[in-house]
Length: 233
Image (cartoon, rainbow, N blue to C red; front, side):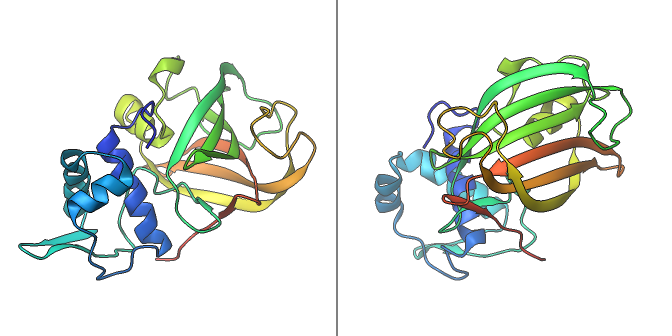
């Protein structure tokens, strides 16, 4: 687990398990190991694990049977913090974390598609990792109409969680265009594909609950570590 994550530890655990359920590593109806054994394997306390399991039970992804244990209940409609994060390790799943590279407010470049109501946007550049392995480079443009200023210290591991809790912006659905692209020259050294290399790439347009475009992003991912996955419901 990432002890420096903006997400509480129990929520990191529940999100990792939710992604494992979605990826098929934990099968519908499967009985989870005993809590003490599971906590030891995950490097956490029994109390923290129980809080994570309670979170999953509340979301309908687990069923607790008295005297028997916890059983997986796979739900295609289940929502989680990383519901729209569609990059997974090649083996499936993986807990997402993020490192902020830069944050700037600027006039929207002409090359960006039309989105939002302002002529300014916040450009957020981040390096994402799955289970600690750097694999996604992000350049996110949030329309400045939702927030005049953003402080780097306030950003969450999950931007959509930050949008919802701090900006009252709920991302309701996204439109992704997946292709290949060239890694930009601002890529940090720990992103294995070097600037100019061809890698997996997708562009995303995100919409709020009123179906207004709110955010646009470029995303480069390392195909040697991860792939793009979407599951139809």
